[in-house]
Amino acid sequence: MTAETGRTPLSDKALHYRSYRLFWFASAAAPFAANIISVAVGWQIYDITRNPLFLGYVGLAQFLPALVLVLVTGLAADTFPRRLIMAVCLGVEVICAGILLLTAFGHIMEIWPIYVALVMIGTARAFIAPAASSLAPNLVPPEALGNALTLNATAWQSANIVGPAIGGLLYGIAPGAAYGTAAVLMSIAGFLILSIPKPPQARRGETKTLETLLAGFRYIWREKIVLGAISLDMFAVLLGGAVALLPVYARDILEVGPLGLGLLRAAPGIGGIAMALYLQRFPVRDHAGHILLVCVALFGLFTVVFGVSTAVWLSIGALLLMGAFDMVSVVLRETLIQLWTPDQVRGRVSAVNAVFIGASNELGEFRAGLVAARWGTVFAVAIGGAGTMMVAGLWSAIFPSMRKQRRIDRRGV
Image (cartoon, rainbow, N blue to C red; front, top):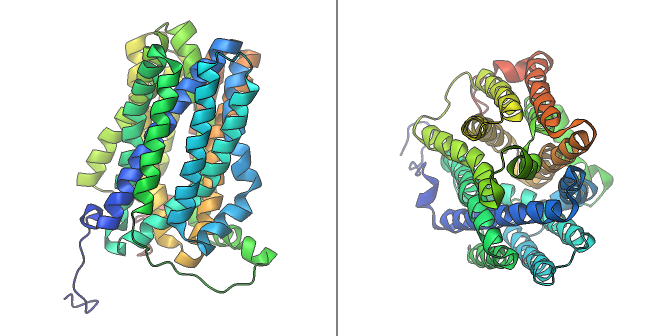
């Protein structure tokens, strides 16, 4: 027993807990499937339209449901069993993968069925995101939460490495093979989630009023460090996101084909997983705020390098470093948010965070597609990266408490 707490110390390794192990394997399988679908859909739509604007619509179709449903999804995660929400939504994604499979097998040249499936996927993920991010703290003690969130990011980045490459390879063999594999992986993820024993979950018998629905927004606005961390990610990746335009680079600029597209998509994940392994061994213990801001600025810098590059080796190198510096930001930001947020509002805070993440990813893809259609792909990526560096500088001035934060928990600046 420790002198400070009077209790037996618990393991700080998340994988020592069976419930978390099941959750972690599901957290690897689901994004693996999502990456396969993302590569296949991007190539399929660009093959049909040859217009980068329609690649931007892919992100918009998946972001809008999270924005429209933000008040509902967070409250659902704080009211209903989070693992059941995840399992049901994964079932919906399996159905969507089946719809995409039919469009591929039927050689349908209309793109509206693809967007219908993407909206359904976006709706399912709008409910999954707050449920999943709120469930992890229920499966491990606080001592292991930082390790758990790093492992979550590792699983996600591992999927980003293997998923795009496998997705490009499968799509090159047959589009139906890509969508069929994704459906199987999502089914496995749903089974694993249902296998998790019912965890404790703090609930209050709150009357469902507008004040209850807005609790997540109020908490984030009150905690300026949380607000700074969430908004930093949103604006940085909103401007710096280049993933949606990778099909253009693969086909028209670097000329590497579907398999090359998969490799380009995998490169940020490789950089991210390498950084995650480093952070597992050497976690950030001091000067967290400064490190967060510097890594966001470096993410923007290498986005510019990727945008202007016409050499495959330089493009892949830039993507590797983008993934590495983004991983530092992800781990610091998510650990801070989860450790600072009480469990009874964690779902609502996570839902707001998911909308910010969606804005930075899916809405960022729409921005990239829109700018690329008007001024060109290279300009869209390069100007976005420059904007990300500016955001890092501005947030350093606007949120001094975040910049000065030395630790990512409540134990002081």
